[in-house]
Length: 352
Image (cartoon, rainbow, N blue to C red; front, side, top):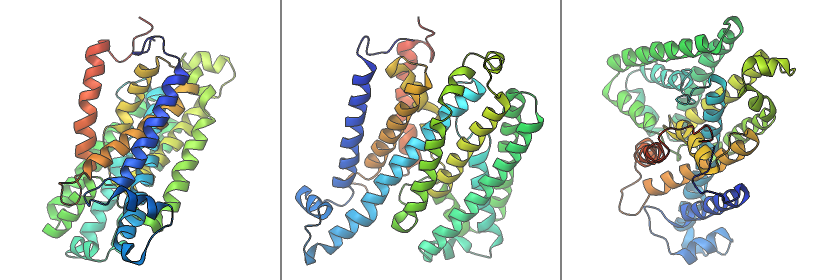
């Protein structure tokens, strides 16, 4: 597989990607829907603030900084989960939501809004962090229940194709249940569910940020230990088994790691589309590599960069508040993938 940059060394491309990531991270701190002079932002970040800068300090430290950190870890986590899913199922259309885990989160939120009482959505929207915690816990519960079912099915099904079909069916079932709960929901409850489903990196906040970062970072760290078996799985399950790899065990760990990453990120940010599907393809085409030793850190960097870029666009000056992250990720990312498809004719070049 050849890189679209020709003979430029992979190390140079990776270094440039890191620079882009740093620049986007800084831009997320300096730019937003509220215009703050760059020198004021710098003084706040370096601790040189005055008493009359409390509002600006609140915006930078309690809104922009947590959003940027959330975007970095959410983007990296979804991209890694997408890479794991595509390798596991050997399917270029696989993404973190393919097993129904994201749908499980949506079902958990929908059930909370329907069965917690009339106008639950209005109550949750007026109770601040308490309401957000309720939504996060219900989303996590729904996602982990689906993950438990998928883990159980992975032990009794003989091949990954059957598991893939089962995951798609679970998505249909949970989607149907979400539709039923939406039908019986009050208008305020339905509005709260729609807002959660639009996706946002601002739902985490300072209080819940440490748990979110630790959970996602742990999943990313564990994925690093799967580099060698992932490379062997690219050659086929029989070949990997002949080399001493416990295929079923590796498949189970891939499901657990990608499932936990998807569950935690979806619960905290809402369903974020496109990143897990497209970033692995972008990494392969940019680097011209199929080895996970290179792809894994690459998708982390590119996923975090794409999430930061989308978060920055969603909060540009001129918008009242912020645009839905889902809309921005799809609007920006889909044309990029189409461009790669046109340029390369297909996602995998097989060295041609």
